[in-house]
Amino acid sequence: MSAEAPSHDTAGQLQTLEMRGIVKRFPGVVANKGVNLEVRAGEVHALLGENGAGKTTLMKILFGLHQPDEGQVLINGRPARIGSPADAIRLGIGMIHQHFMLVPEFTVAENVALGLRSSREPFLDLNAVSTRIRELAQKYNLRVDPNALVWQLAVGEQQRVEIVKALYRDAALLVLDEPTAVLTPQEVDELFVVLRQMRQQGHALIFISHKLHEVLSISDRVTVLRDGQVIKTLETKDTNRQELAQLMVGREVLLRVEHEDVPASEARLRIEGLRAESDKPGVPALRGVDLEVLSGEILGLAGVSGNGQRELAEVIAGLRKAVGGQVWIDGRNVTGLSCSQLLDSGLSYIPEGRMRDGAIRDFTVAENLMLRDHTRHQYSDGLFLNSSRIAQQSDQLISAFNIKTPSRETPLKNLSGGNIQKMILARELSRKPRVLIAAQPTRGVDIGATEYIHQMLAAQRREGTATLLISEDLDEIQNLSDRIAVVYEGQIMGIVRRGEVDARELGLMMAGVRRT
Image (cartoon, rainbow, N blue to C red; front, side, top):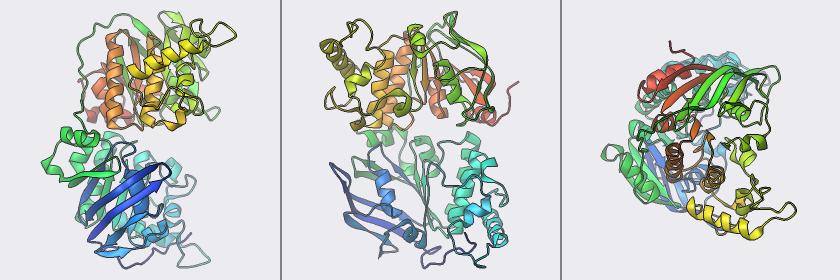
């Protein structure tokens, strides 16, 4: 570790970054097909595209994690060789990944100094580091305590540490990959204040996000990628959400779900005083949760990641033991029942970790579609599987749910994330559930697959299913839900009806302010 920030020729002097004719090939796929991108000092340049459009590959090339097969990178019109992240940092390029690269047990100052040479080698000069951090914090309106331990910081505060870490290394251009994915609305507003301040100070910013309203709010220009190619670069002030979505997908996209009235009746799912531990023994994840989901209703559960959402879904689905409280389905106490018993009770579960809890990557599409039902009499005679019946049902589901796969015998690992999620939807919804737990159903999928998943959830609502929608995407919660419950540190902060409060009020509850 060290306190000495690097010195280089381009930091603070970067006027333009150009990526010209970038081509990157991997076995069986061309990720970038002659991509041209220009980013200027003093602008926020948004990079949009579906999953697989080539955004991540392009940014990995810019940060030295991949080498292009063709094309070149130019800084201020001069070719730049970026063979590693160290080269990128030396040239004034910083990158903030969606999953922060911080050591939780270290202080802010220790994290910022990590990997740099010390001005007092072999000793560590954290006082000098802390002084510089405070200077940067004041200049860019960042609230950062150099002496705080990272694990004690909120998510938004950790993100500010990542920004300070890049600024400490004199980043003139900063790449932000899905920077708002785990932030409350208030934290997003604070981040945008910082980004606008950086823009005024002459930094160039590349902003990658799936949230179109944020792109329209923060960016000056937008470049849209599709299938590894640049479709269009345009001024943000001259476009709108509908046009950007259409450019990303190549067709018109329905950004909002029709929310017609469905008469909600009896409570299909009832949760009373539910308590559960986290993965750390003795540490509570749920602390007396009370919820009720009606037939024909979508109840959205909003909250910042890590506040008990995953544990709640796992307890309901029989994957985690409750240490107190009860779960009822259709008036029957199902607390502690096995997964198969819960399935027989009318529960379907779309898990947060689709490849951990929802599918087997080396099984075929057909095998995964039958994963929960292969022992039922229509697919098995007790000893042998009915291959023809399984093939027929699999083909019907592949067609009905528009799963893009070469065949039903294709290994699931060969499918895109969006199509794997469609497969899980097909399996769970084909069972005609009375209660549906949908945990992060659109996480990591592109706008086209998100549109389809939203339509399927709305269709289940019309069928009378009681749906508990767990999502960290507040737009998704507000778009789909009839009522919204907010969870914070394993407790419900309040439950409101659709349209009753705005994003700011929801954000306050997500930050721990209980609604009276």
